[in-house]
Image 1: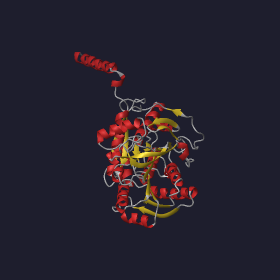
Image 2: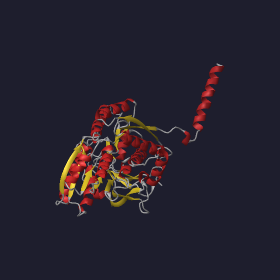
Image 3: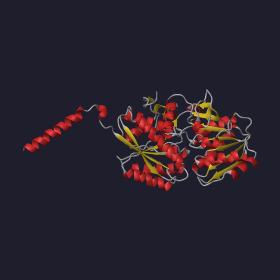
Image 4: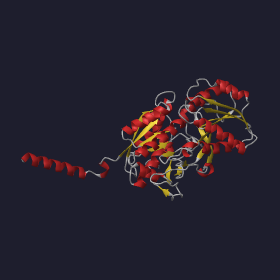
Length: 434
């Protein structure tokens, strides 16, 4: 009897001690996010940098946020392959993870989006949300759109709207060569580049088009020789990873004078490959610019201090800002409620106020056109410690590059297409935004 009373008093004291803890000392709700991208193979360096970017931003947001949650990034290596992406997704499901992050490769993204939709249809109450931070095939927000998929980068036609506007305004460009990776993303880039240039500058000739096996080409000099033989004034390429750095290397070794219009010249390693040789000739058309004022400067400095690399994937900040704002609005971390809260949400991130369009779950944001130049007072950020930077030339507000939605979306608990635009809601900033 005495022993029972003693145990009771001990339990009561422990309970009172827990109740007496201040709110900030209590454990926050944990939100795990499965990072599914290449951590081995030819694109491993890019994947590792992206993973570190997500982890770095999560650590910053976890210091305190309006949603009162803690984010944990759990890595899964998909080796850049579709089947390994599906295997990694199933492993994440088995661990009870309800949010997934992926971006390297539109083929993997399309497969993952379909897998998420199938899982959610079969397991109501255990839904999963997919934040796509880099795959930009327009099918993902068009013919293959899904309620559970959210696109955080501009799609191919949105980026090409800005890129072809700049080419249109340059009378010195009359001959264009296309070099793209041989999968759905690269083919979409070539398709839209042809169509948009034909409308904006019918006098421009597409003098060549090559598709290269993803991550397989070790020497791009034969392709550059074809560019020179065609007397091209510029190359349009959406290559990324080693397919971009090796292309740049071959162009430099051959003395190519044509401009390069790129989607990803700021990605890890590419700026170092460009170096001092192509000032004025390499163009970047992207949702960010390293010289943007405000929170981006703090993120870049903090990331470089910690990892000795550039913070080249700022969409990671946007992704956690979006989740924070949506969870704050929904008063929940349940994926269905959070997904519904993200639709139509306007919030602040490193590049200003942006909106997640409800009709197709495409993030609408500015696009920046920049040129590789020596650092200057106006453009001071030293990219990869090269002494050079992407100097900002033109800013395209979201309304200048946004195209009509092409998505017919099936939403949970209804057979109707989303009928009207939801009201605009502005959410507060996440930590580190001042």
